[in-house]
View 1: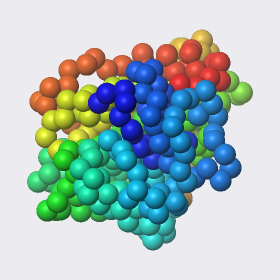
View 2: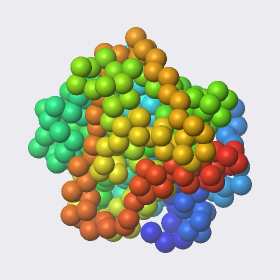
View 3: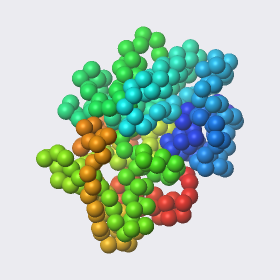
View 4: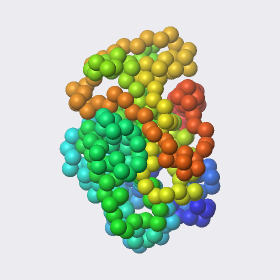
Length: 323
């Protein structure tokens, strides 16, 4: 990539898209075409950012054939895991993504798109991003299924962009997620609980193999996500699916204890029942197998959960600031 390249970013008004935009701006990339639903204007995430133009998500297909661009980062999606209507996810996460793939292939433009750890379901086949395992996976909700179906579709195409990377994002947290409300990270939700009521709120376990608070996830800080994405697009290893996580699972109880320490507040955790809308589709454990990425040559040090939460709280949440 060079500074004159024209780059398209979908989901640019949101969390991951705006953070990657900020990362590129810091590297002096400014020829950026932003795609999202801009009917209410730009979000606070984009204030002060530098870019070339904006395109409404519903207009992109009408104009993309006439656009000249060098790279495509497809982060836009319906990411509501509580939305149970598969047709909605199919429209935005599968069919729209097929359109993006088509034009990146036609124009010979490298494509990076957001997949998800939700594609792994209960993890009964592990969290291995090698392609041979993909047909065994059984996502637990329509969101995960739509991402999974696009992953499978990509792998089976005879024609493709010159390079493509489907990134299975695990639990991403960090600045610029303020707008996500119920879909925000457990860290943002509990920062507000702890600040207002001096207590954290976690879901009870409804699985006999896990005590309350011992549910485990792989949490990755958004700054590490940016580094990995940029490394992939500048080093161009073998195309395909790649896990993007820390490679280390941590319990929710550990996570909020770190938060209490950073905020200098005495530990106080309340456990509440898991909502009925997600109880049957709840992942009790995730942990990214990162061997493929590291074998490809990525060797940057990632934030520990302690380091990431510390940076997020001290430099962003306490100041209500953006990346």
